[in-house]
Image 1 (cartoon, helix red, strand yellow):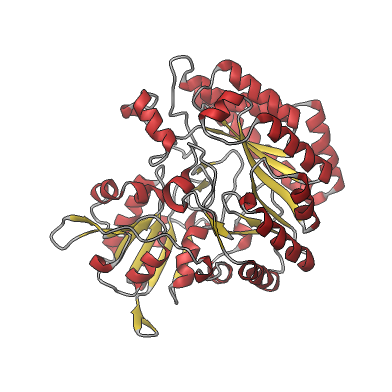
Image 2 (cartoon, rainbow, N blue to C red):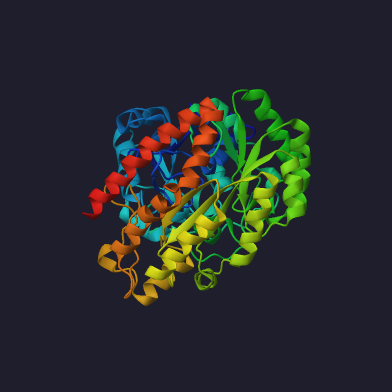
Length: 485
């Protein structure tokens, strides 16, 4: 039955990250929605946030929990409203999940959220005519108003199908300024999720991730979230609001070994980062975050003293011109200094790199591999340039003919990322093959193998994790080779 909250009758609401490709992580903080080389899952924080606003709701994260479509469809009669998180690669499959829910419960109101529908609301509603609405941009309070039963025409940020079948786009919702209006997501995690289901190779297990702010000051042309949902202004929760949630996590999740701050760039506001680190140090919390390779030594030292263990850093390329092409805003020399500072302070780095960005050649691929070997992060991830709709990279690719209309998929039939961009001087096959070459040349070095072996001998837990990852990684390389051949 409908639950009353204050003066409002709130609909029984299901927040759903739908079943997808095996091992597919498409509903959370990962920049590229895809099946990974090593099985990993981020928390569905973008769904947990509105779920925390809608009292009595339920969050189902099907991929990491191994929940099938049949089990999800069986939930449909228990709810009045279902909100599905989707992405550009997973949208066709997600739309079929929405159809199955509607067929099971024709009275169920079904809508979608996520970057895909934020930038292509008209196309999304036309491609899935059984959808009732999509919520654009920051959708937290948009969804709350839908759950309260407010008339669609009165809800900012909503695109919907009218009674006559026309698609209507309401004015955009003003960007959220007071981030403390958002309730903590961790109580939703505790209620509906199992931390053991969430695994990231470079984080301690089990971990918890959350956002302390939204938006990113950087202008990287490929990055999805700032260009579609979060914006380029870093809006943050107060220090006390963040620390309050951390204290709750310590009490509610005694098994959790690390907290990851999934803000696009946690170090964009250095003074605040230092203030949070001071409080985290007082609490004895081990934590990690996304950082830009421009943080000065003095700030890094304060963060380390406050319990910072690891930073995730987007280096992207080892070629200066490519960094300029994508508006990275960091030079190679600055990145080298930042990395050296982290090494000196004992802060581990998970470095991320992208093959096939504008300006890429066979020579620049080798430059980037050599650069990664030189700076030697603790671990790395190599992705293929993905021109997501709504990004500057997507517009650039369309204008220059790098993305053929007839073959512009971002993932293959198994959910693995493909090379969708091609250049006159560099083919898709060459870009795709460079990923395997990068991994082999970075990890299969005598020095790197020795470092990993030493780490494994010191920690049985690390040994178990590394061995599992090793098997998955070898299988990943084998599957890629089969695809190329």
